[in-house]
Image 1 (tube, helix red, strand yellow):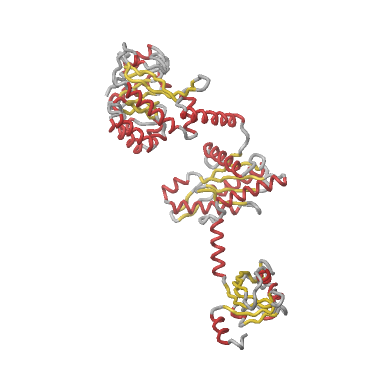
Image 2 (tube, rainbow, N blue to C red):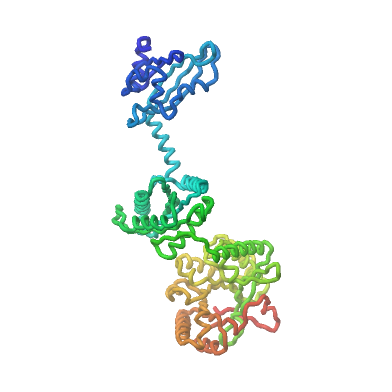
Amino acid sequence: MTSALPQASSILASLGQAAFVWDIATDAITWSDHAAVFADIPAEALASGAEFSKLIEPTRGIRSDALGHSPAARGSDGVPYRIEYGVRTSTSAPVLWIEESGCWFAGPDGKPARAQGIVRVNNERHAHEEQLLKLSRHDPLTGELNRTHLVAALAEAIEETTRFRSSSAFMLIGIDHLARINDAFGFDVADAVISEVGKRIRARLRGGDVLGRFSGNKFGLILKNCTVDDMNVAAERFLAAVRDDVVPTKSGPVSVTASIGAVSVPRYARNADEAINRAHETLDMAKRRRSGSFSLWRPNVERDAQRRVNIRVTDEIVTALNERRIVMAFEPVVEARSRDAAFYECLVRMEQDDGQVLLAPDIVPVAEKLGLIRLVDHRVLELVVAELAASPSVHLSLNISPDTTMDPDWWSSIESLMRAHPGVAERLIVEITETVAIQDIDDVRGFVTRLKNFGSKIAIDDFGAGYTSFRNLRKLGVDIVKIDGAFVQNIARSADDRAFVQTLIDLARRLGIKTVAEWVQDDESAVMLREWGCDYIQGRLIGLASSQRPWAAPAETVLPAAS
């Protein structure tokens, strides 16, 4: 071929390619210029299909298989084929990736008798494909397995330990307070911290262990053949690796710690989802206890019982919402001097199928924890507005949860309800807890302003239980402060509580904010509160919450809340 087509051979060689004819009957291969592609491979290794196949990986018979699996040719037409394979001259030599394309021609029996084609090196393309494959499996920042393939590896490990009755562990390692690093130095520095923590964990793995980036600040780790004692030792090794040395970054050294949650598999997790959930749970426990600590999942009878209760109550809440069994009870708030009703606090109740009624403490914590509180708050808003619309002389207050203050759907509901019922907003008081008020003072101030623009009033509930300053109260522009009943109920017997409550009332009065004392138990306490200048009182002395509507009685006059 070289003598017949010298010009074509030269052109192919200049392109880094070589042409060949393979006589399959004799197994002889003739090349145009093998040096153009196989410069470091001796000619005798390329002279026959058998010798050439010894250099090929991953499958030596890939060239013969390509011809054998193609449909037989008709007449003199050739059958095209295209294959890729690696060529390696020795175990230590790098792989040369080859793309071969050509046609084979059948003999009288219809089987391949001759093949001819062109080979060329495609290392660059193969490297690109390998990089794409790696990116599909690995996290681009740390180079470790991404979440999808980490979870797949975990499922495989659990199946393997179950089959061989061994024990492994799954750990979630979370970098503590990474958000603070983001805020203080920027995301690029936080990325540098994540990358360095990954390297430190990787350096302390045993052979066969699997590491992956689970999420933004979390790494997942599969420790094979790992007992509980091994887990404790390994966890301390990883924690020390993160905390003992600062992380150098372009913005200077950064000190970080990590916390770890772990679960033994398959003993306490029979599948990947269960392992992840339980590792998450223990990681949260570790972080709550102390940053930089380790927690191991263990069975807990009380926790499991509470979860069964949560599941039952959740189902009951959803069913009650659908069946309109969420109702209101009304607790009077009266003027401290006249004892005349000023407004009524609306408290949520849930009627059960057996006639029993669940109170707010039974409903609200579970609803908040499981994300149902916004549905409850929407229903309560509808009920309260309906009451106000039906009774033009009454003033009502309702409590809303922290999440609801920022819920755009709740705002859409209240805006449409206020437009549909003019005059209702001025008789509505919205209570938010002190904890909510201090989470983000600017966001809460926006919430307060929007409600006051409707004409409604704002009350801070449970004041004194948190850390809100009176400066923040003035900044928020609230109308009413409800003093936490834990300080009020014992003022007749506790000098400390008397001093605290009296101080709150005096400061609120100086700021022009009305005060409500909760949990007033007796006349002696009520007289003290009145003399100190408290505006309103509520509690057992006045009357507890009831589903009855006291304002419906013709003899009772309901006074509006003081402005």
